[in-house]
Length: 255
Image: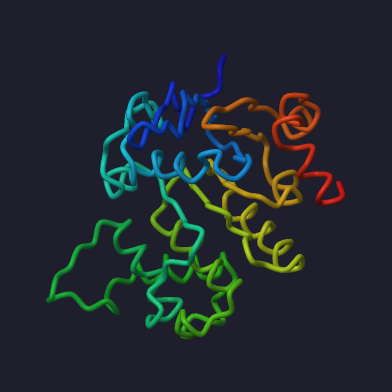
């Protein structure tokens, strides 16, 4: 029996004017899999994430989330169906505390909407969930610190906390370890691994150490097409991948 799919791309295409960026990309991600998307600069990785998360509408093709088509839906509608995304650049409420940032995401995920007669301190379920997420990302001791005063690594952790706070089952992380030191990266990979247990993860990542240490499978995107999708060992040994991308990258990094 084939595993249940969390996310499926079917012959996905995206053109900007006469320039085709995504050229018939297909991908089937099983529930609970951790998938890294790699490829050279200009391969279309960010465009692919923008299509999946609803920021762009595909020119043609289909995107299925838990079997339901989502292409063309607004980002908030896709989020409500269980998909959440973080970005390359931290996107936080800088003048709110770490706890308040998480609580904003929790409130939306729990279905709370603005009501002038409600006090946030009275929303015990939301406050408890926010505290739990803070503990998961190990920022509970920094809960009252403004986001603008957190370290870079803490800000990235906070953004991932916001991403998971709404209870999404499919998580998209766009270069989560960019700009981090080796020690910060190692801790961050462990954090990602721990908080995405039971969830489906897609991440765009350039650090091959992170890719091979985190991913169950690797999708290689070259010129808008998925040329390989397999386990890390199989992708590493794939001659097409070596010729198109991986050999040069691993040589640069000394692997």
